[in-house]
Every structure is written in C-alpha cells, then in structure tokens.
Image 1: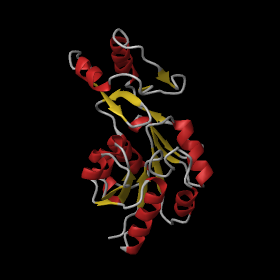
Image 2: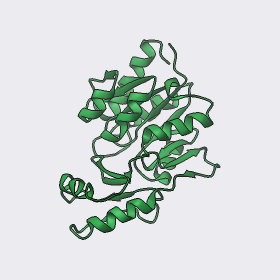
Image 3: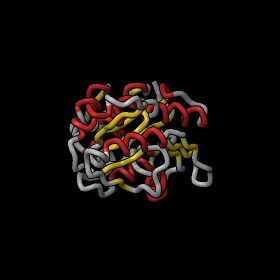
Image 4: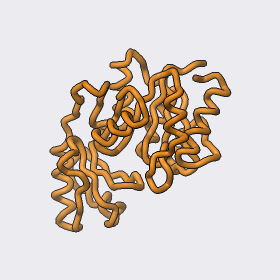
Length: 226
C-alpha cells in the first residue's frame, strides 16, 4: 500500500537531542514527492518557520491540534478552548508558582515550565469540573483541552487536503504523538520515544531523534509505502 502524505512531530523527531534541526532529516523531507505536515505542541509561528526553512508547503498542526494552517498565506484555524485552560491555570496557581511559556502567542492551550509536580497537579485537577488535561512533552507541560490533540488536528487538516488519517504515515516521539500515530494508516515512533508513542506505533526505529526520522523514511521507501 502506498500512503499519500506524512505527518510528523518536530522536537525530538526531526531534531537533535539539543533541539537543533537535524539537517539530514530536513534534506530527506525535502526529497519526498508527497505532502509533509508538521505537527507540534509548540506555537504556530515556530512550526511555520520550521516548515519554511525545511522547504515544505506550510501544512502545520500546532498547539497539540488547537491550531491548523494549510499554507503560508492562509489564515489559521483556531479552536476555542483557552477559557477552560485558564481556569485550570488559575486553580493550580493557588498551589504552585507556575511560569507560562509563550503566553502572548498561544491561542488554545497553556504551556508551562517543567518545574513542578505534574502528577500531583493532575490529581488536583480531577477535583475540578474542567474538560482539560495535563501532559508532559519533555519540552513543556501543557494544560490543554481533553477534546483536542494532534489526532483531531490531523483529521481536520486531512479534510482540507482531500485525505483521511488512514492516508498518512505518522512519525513521532512523545505522549502527545500517540493518538496521531495510532490513527494514521501507518505509525512510527523513533527510538527515543515515550512508551506511549512506541506502544501506538506499527514500527519503532533503531536510531533516535532526527536520525530516527531519516531511518523511518528510508524504511517506508524500502517497503514501497511512499
């Protein structure tokens, strides 16, 4: 079976461990004849800049599915979930000294510095009637809607591309990639991936980080999947 597009995470998947873009991964993505979607928990301007520097067409899923862009000159599609996240932040701020990351740019979720007990905070939030969840992507702790994730983002962007998630190969490394990896037609986790990402995947690479992404694409090509 040949897949029609690839969706993949940025940090930890096409980067080095220190978050530098892996140039081998970027070059490999540039050679593909199918659309490439970047899916990240980071903000949309970060994702768009990364897509532009790599040489992609500007298909982007940002803020863990909360923001969708279908091209560099297109207006973003933004979900309306920030109010619930702000309520959760206000509640947790009574117990922790929390630091927001990029608050002026985030539209649908809240990202926090990883300097507090997330598991305890998660238990505290269960006492509140809020439709939010807390996840740790290894780069930030996110307070996000429990109705929005990279998989819902993939479903939305796939519609604009005339595709379905089954038409995609998904590649990632983190817990926030797991739903996307599982719902795609074929899912790959790089070797440095979380247990959740690896469990959801159809294939796990031997190489880590950006080298793992290169290996993944070479594997897909060898199997005739792309």
